[in-house]
Image (cartoon, rainbow, N blue to C red):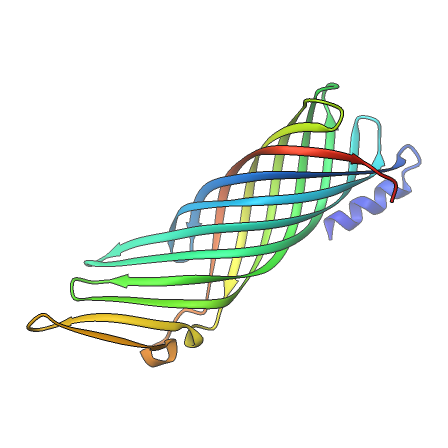
Length: 229
């Protein structure tokens, strides 16, 4: 992986000094994008990340990073009088590389690359003039690659504010047949029929995967902790 190679090169560089510093940041993010199911109408979440500065090259620092993200996103489509609304939720854990460069004593710029995996759930809702169908799927898996470019403003020795842009490419997989199915149908004469079961009861080929590409913006705070590991 790229981050392993970067750490190895830094370790071999005699001009780079070893350094042990830990910092953590908390930042909400919002964005949009596209998916295999249609336009990604909204993407929002909260990210918690911690990084260790292992090598200091004077103006720049390098080290590994761990991220925990909680996110939600939706896809809305209107096709031939039928409305399709998919809502997703996922929690992922990522491992990556963080590189920072000091522009001045107060301003830093940084780059983060993270590969993450996790679990989540989704609701697939289909509405027509005569029926409403919802399929709830749990146990959805997600795999994502994220690139971030950040700007940091140091407020004090330990506290900094940050803002950044994130590019995500993610893929989801699930077992649609195991999903919980609820359906309401209005028959002739305004007779209401309610049915429930699983995705297997639909007896049709159901999608088992999707993917998306998104751009989001985040703003948050970072706390630096001085510690020897």
